[in-house]
Amino acid sequence: MIRRFISVLIMAALLVSPSYAEELLPSIPKATGEPHPEGNEYWRVNHPTLLRHDRDLTVIDGIRDIDASLAQCVTCHAVKGPDAAPVTNESPEYFCRVCHDYAAVQIDCFQCHNSVPDVAELTGLLPLSQQDEMAKLQAYLDGVAQ
Amino acid sequence: MIMPPKEKGAEISRRDLLKTGGALATMALAPGVTLMAFGGKATADGLKPGARWGLLIDAGKCPEDCSACVSACSNEQGWENNGLDTDPQWIRKVTLRDKESGRENSLPVMCQHCDEPPCVDVCPTGASFKREDGIVLVNRHTCIGCRYCMMACPFKARSFVHEPVTGQKSTTPRGIGTVEGCNLCVHKIDRGDGTTACVEACQATGNNAMMFGDLNDPESEIAIAVSTYASQELRADLGLNLGVRYQNI
Image (cartoon, rainbow over all chains, first blue to last red; front, side, top):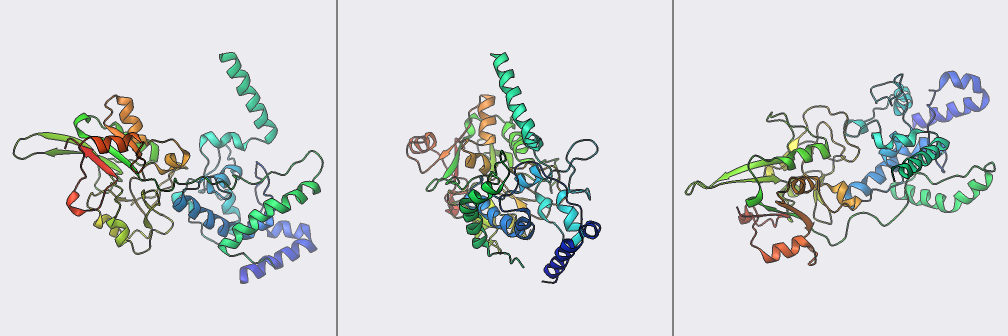
């Protein structure tokens, strides 16, 4: 409750003085892929509930094509390190850690889940325009192979 | 102030938003920019109702020096066994020897996916559970690592993760402080592959000692084989009705 009160205070501060808020708040890394239709603010508040609900759908009912999957989170929200590879949750620059460190909330997800996307999903990290280019390139290569 | 909705409520409001709010949001955006739904879609995928997935293993076709199924499982699921007693072991090769005749027999042993699993009976949190299609799993979200299930299992099929794990497969999350065992490649089944990593590897070697399928489907290859040829369960005296059956042991 206190945390929510503080976040409301911070939001109020954000409205009053954007420059002041920038110093106070963690700087959230930009994501790739399609934006959340519900809006970022909804996800900031509700992501634990959404993930908890959908994990049960997968583990117990075997439904793998779900709205809130951690694998999808770490794909779009991957933060690239100096070597252009996505950083793991060991890094303080990791997407989840930026806010969780700030709020001092421990994340247990990555004890079991991989914090970086599978290599096959890395294409999803490209901007949408380039993803299209990749598809065209692949189609061309397939054509040449035939 | 935004209150987080209840678990069910979150799902409904999110779906409703996708259905009704999506059109409004699309209209409000700049021309040429389309708003897409996040991630997947609400479909009727998931487990096959009424199925009973199982394996049929012909020990007569399983050479003692072959462990293709074990390494395939290790690669598919991302576990590694370096020979320590505490290392994970989802599947292992076992050699049986008849004391009288001296006849030796080699066969793979993994979670037998009991119809009445003792591991589920003893689990204090409900983490050890049987899916509707007969696959016995550990829900690591609720596993507290007490290892009662390891004690209860007559087949020594489960192991405990003692060390921190990194670089897991996205299809097989696994980590410290939880119990794990053969999940019958549940992610492959849900994907519709219709086989498991061990069976694929066994067929690739040409031994064809393993078969995967739905025991409840009378048309399936495995159900026909089980009803035609003699096969047996390990420790049939326990009356657990296993999903894994063996021939020629």
